[in-house]
Amino acid sequence: MKQSCIDFLMEQFGDEDTVKEIYDEYAKSIVEKISEADTTLASGQWDDLDKVAHAIKGNALATGDNAIAETAIELRLAAKLQDKDKSLTLVNKIKELAKDI
Image 1 (cartoon, rainbow, N blue to C red):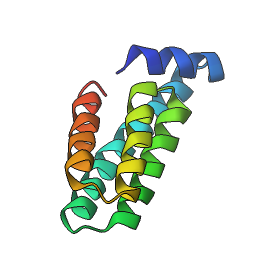
Image 2: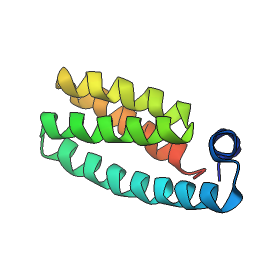
Image 3: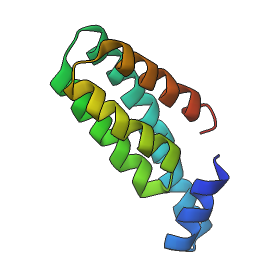
């Protein structure tokens, strides 16, 4: 678990059970969204990649995971520009940052 996320969620909710439930859902969603990002990037579905990046950003912001949120913002821009190399780099960065989840 990322301590920064736990701290953020504790400030918001103050209840360990609620925090654990939200964090567990976040972790599950990141795994799913990374898989979707891989698929949409591989097939060049730029609008769909933008939507996936938007979802990652929103989920990360909701849990205080600023590093992933910032990377997802960059990914949205790369997807809009249809920059495959930059998008691949950013998806891989999100994967690396998600290893701590």
